[in-house]
Image (cartoon, rainbow, N blue to C red; front, side, top):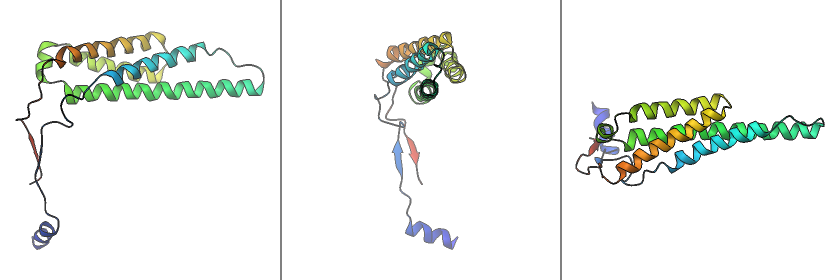
Length: 159
């Protein structure tokens, strides 16, 4: 108990308040849309690569391009999941689900599609990912006109 009092005196704890992770109004699905489109473009590039040439330098160039396309595809599929997750957890509210009851399933499907695109090179799956992100973005923009961020419902931090 004595140690706790000393620590409290030396390292005082201050109270902080917040009602959102970040200031209201800065959410935007554009990063998720660009990431999903990048996945689709990388799938198209991978499928268009063709077979490597016979020389060692052509084979190395082919392997290099393939590795780069795959790395970008996987990074952007993960970014798509991350950005959709931010919208789901930080932006969408119960009021949005009341108006768009399939939103939960759409977000779940989109993150599963992003994972599938990391695992495979499939033009149909890439197109479905782009379409699914576009549908979430449409819901986002439909709800954006109404501000559900309530500055009076704050969360307390500290003691």
